[in-house]
Length: 250
Image 1: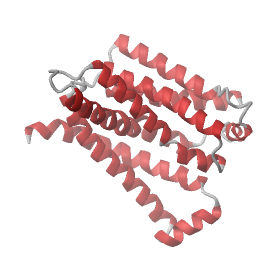
Image 2 (image 1 turned 180 degrees about the horizontal axis):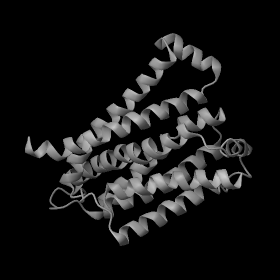
Image 3 (image 1 turned 135 degrees about the horizontal axis):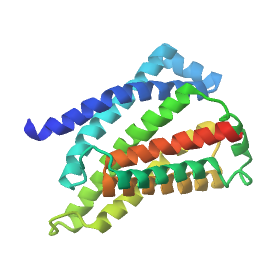
Image 4 (image 1 turned 180 degrees about the vertical axis):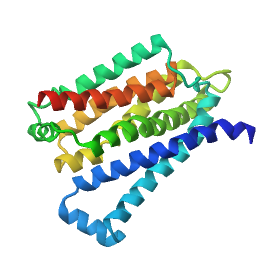
């Protein structure tokens, strides 16, 4: 039980965040559905409230499974660091998060993708569910899923398959795992892209992989260098900065 104490405590700390973040993510997702799709979903599930509950439960399960097993795997890779924020690492993380947020808000693809203009116009007001979902689910739960769990799992597999004679996981294995996890992170945004714009064009796909992939690599580097808490901080700040800029500028 001793070996599982810290992973269990970490997971229990994630549950309230997953509940709140998952609920507001569900609110945002349901509000984004067209009336016909929403009616079909309600007919299949029973009610709008039940749809919220199922989507929230899904977030909690993701957080619990990825948090518990991700912690164990990351610990084997020596990627679990004391959960604290030191000055130098915090400054680097804040700069990385702020720059990511600025890039995300100053989307250079707008001139080539007409659909982006409408999406930005819809972002110039404060929408509490969207903010809470972005900060808690996007900034924390997604980092647990994509970095702490997936990136760590890929690194562990790569280490044992190709470098098992090494006493510690090689840096190159961590870098490759980061790139693969970041690519998967970007691909995970394709459904939301379809939901937002109604279709997928070559430019939308390119934009999705370029922006989310780059951010994923940045967050992954912060994770392997400083700890998962720094990846979470940068991810949350990227959403806060981008949304604040949209409100001020648009």
